[in-house]
Each structure stands twice: as structure tokens, then as C-alpha cells.
Length: 262
Image (cartoon, rainbow, N blue to C red; front, side, top):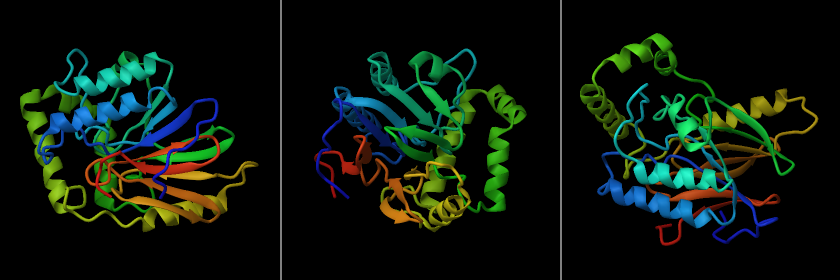
């Protein structure tokens, strides 16, 4: 993992970040955490050509038709400034920020993707996703994903007053962190399912341009290794790693925010 600064081509760099978990209750000072994210967004503004947010940017978000949930004003403002300045912002939703509909894309001027994004960047082929739906998924998780994405279930959830749903969502999120991997002191998930998925996809890919990079979030660990001829990148998080990726048209590097613990 490189700690250096990439030399931009035409003064433009593509940036990649995931698992900011803005608003999470286990941060000692959630507002300070949001400010730090905004400082980073402002720091990349002069060189950024594109910004890819690979899910779980917000610890919880549900868009209502006529009202906006409280919070994240600084972050949304910083994103809007980037988009207004000409930076292409793409948000690949994760398992915590599933319920982005039309408000954030239209208000901030960003593109939202649900699922796998297969795209060319600087002549290199990138396949990107949050990572929660990649590989073999347990039956319970498949059921939850189906319920969360069901339009009728979303409408029923929206009909419940936010004073109940928001509290339930954050409590559930905190419970999952204690039970699984996303708390500040917990262990990251093993990335074996990602490696297996990449191997299967690589062997089945008949494109004239093979995949150069597979980029994921979700696993809360930093990975940069070659799998079946492609680079597998896992971006880490902003809970313990404070890490992000950048691509200058030639090299993909992972960095940590200046001043963060290694």
C-alpha cells in the first residue's frame, strides 16, 4: 500500500472511498467525523476528475417524498460543491444507504448506482460494487436484501413516522456492529468471497478488454492483491483505516488520510 502522492495526468485524478458511516452512533463525535470527511473532500477538489463513493457512506438514510431527514448538511454541501465544479460524482449504494431514490441525485447532481458498475476509466476497465451482495450470500441475507428493495415494503416503511423508524434503524445498525465487524474495535470480514467471485467472473469474461481492477468496500479492511490477472482492491473504511484510493490513469494507489493512525 502506497503512502505517496500520485502524479496526476492532466491535473485530474479519480478518487474512491467507502464506508464513511456518517452518523454512526459509535463515533465519539459524529459531527467532528463529518467535518473530517468534508475537509478531505475539499482537499481533493483541485485535482479530482471523478469521485466514486462505494457504499455505506451514511450509516442510515431513508428518503421521504416531501421531507429530508436531519443531518449531513456539511457533507451534502461539500458533495454539491464538487459536483458543481465539474467533478463527476458516482454513489454506489451499500447495505446501509440503500434507500436513496431521486432527491440526492437531483439535488446534488450526482449519479447513483444500485449494484455492480462496470466502466472504463482512463482506458482501464473497472468493476466496482459495495460488496455486500457479492459472492455466496446466506439465505437470511438474501431475504433481507429482497425485503429492503421491495417497493411495497419501502412504502409501508415510509408510512411509519420517522420518530420510530430512525431510532429503530440506528439501534439495529449498532447491534449489527457489535455482533459482526463494523465497530471501532471489531475485526474485519475475511475477503475470501470476493476473491472467489473475481475468479469466477474472470474465467467467464469474454470481453475484448479484460477487467483491470475490481474495487469494493464493505469489508472494512484494506486489500490490494492480484487475483486471476486482475487487481482486487478493498478500500478499507473511515472507522479505523481512514483510507481511500486514487487512480491517475496509470497507477491505482491506496492512501490514508494525513495524520491518521497506520
